Length: 165
Image (cartoon, rainbow, N blue to C red):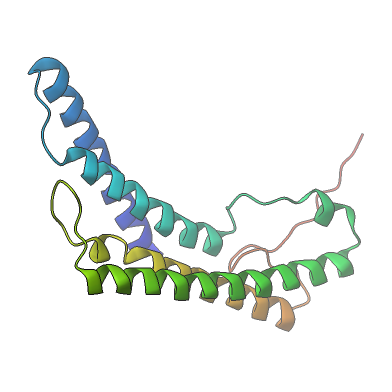
């Protein structure tokens, strides 16, 4: 997890530097630096996929909980467990599809338009992140099968908050 966070922080700094440098070069010197837009774009792709994996691990991804919060605890546990295994299977399938995409980019030798960097390297984060996300969801599924508490992530147990009026 520390590696994921360090990588996300580093990529965010690179994106910020590229965008700031591009703005300065464009508006101060009336000339754009070739390739900075691509650097920022691919940085955002990496942040998106790495962030998905990390948020799954931490249980901080966006979720629709209106229905889950209204049901009794035993039903809630079943729902969270089913959601976890379904999400695991789905993200594993996405890892296979994204691997095929990366493989086709490699086979065709596709490169980025400006920097001429191999696209398969830039998009290789997708199958890796989908696979790790799948593993995290599967681990959450196993935790929910083995424990009586409801795990919404690998570290977080669902806490029922009592509302007092």
